[in-house]
Image (tube, rainbow, N blue to C red):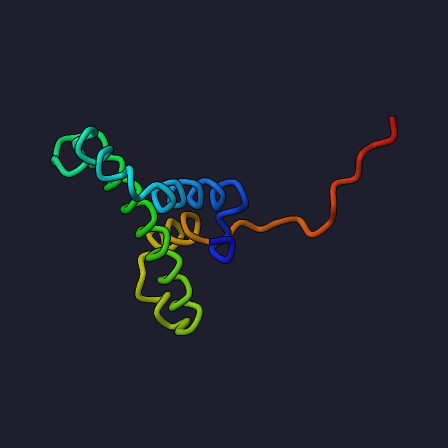
Length: 105
C-alpha cells in the first residue's frame, strides 16, 4: 500500500483493520451474529461496504493512471477537467527528499 503513496498512517490503519479480523476468527462468528453484519441495513455492513468501495476506488484510480503512463495518447481522450481530477485524486503524494532541519534554538 505504500507503493500507492498512501503513507504509513493509512497503511497501518488498513493493516490493523484487516489484521484484527484475521486474528480473531473463532470469535468473529459470534460477533457477526451479534452485530448483524450480514443484514443489509446494519452499521457493520455499511462500514464494510464503505471500506471496500474506498479501497477499490483507490486501486482503480491508481491503475488508471498507470495505464495512462504506459499509453500516453489515451490522455488526449479525456476531458481536461476529468483528467486533472483523476490525477489530483489518485497520484501518489510528492515527498520532499530533504530531511527537515530543526532550527537551532
